[in-house]
Length: 85
Image 1 (cartoon, rainbow, N blue to C red):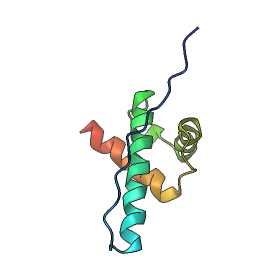
Image 2 (tube, helix red, strand yellow):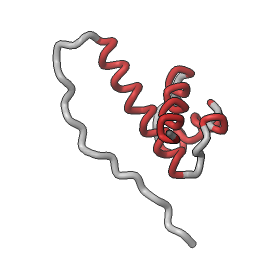
Image 3 (cartoon, one colour):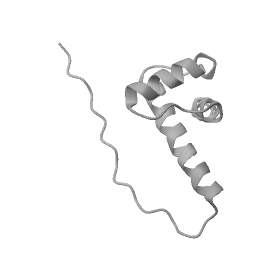
Image 4 (tube, rainbow, N blue to C red):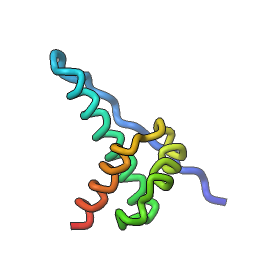
């Protein structure tokens, strides 16, 4: 029986102070999308067409990330397309 893989998250650095709130929201959204894209690629989803919102949200639950929005799901697909080229 195979052991369950555990994710080790890197230590977080403090974000720069004094930027608009929108910058922090976009930054965190990009990080979330990148984590989800990497998880999908690790499980064999190499085509953005196969990365549906449902599949991305299911992966978020498996990895322990809050449910992504539609915009974050689009960003995940964009990262997968960028990886293919």
